[in-house]
Length: 223
Image (tube, rainbow, N blue to C red; front, side, top):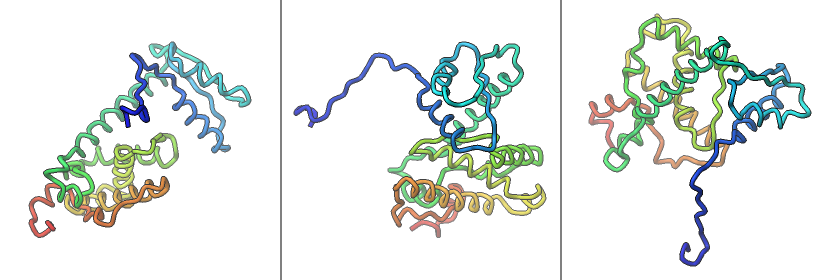
């Protein structure tokens, strides 16, 4: 097909980061949320503020720039971006598996997220629960595309931990149960999200929800 010119690759040496996708997502949220009045503060020098301003001609939304060295809120947002970036990368790395060699495991454990993700002390539990509250109140929003396994998984994990009213209630369950409950919930969230995008899961990909190390330790789980 390539030889017959049915398919062609028009690549460039450089692709600019034009913020079109990000600003469109921001506009979509504004249009669908009439409860709040918005104003945006961007770090000086970013093109995002100019792109957003050009799309806000008909909306009464303030867009300004500020110096991150002086603006406390921008510095806080930078910290939050770094925190979630590292957390997301860690979660993504925990899910990497060799599908060829570990096919049975990958189809039965949902994600290769180890049980130590659920071995939390009270401070860690409280911090995750606070983040869960911010997500629930839409103070933190996950913007995701069609392929969103990592963001769905991370959000699911935070919401699962946050579903417990207290650390004592959470701590009464052993690691096996915590991991299994989280992964069963994740499997359903994945299906719901992708079903909305007309992407269906095959029946043989129905998972048992166990974390990998528990699945490996118990040979009875293997098919």
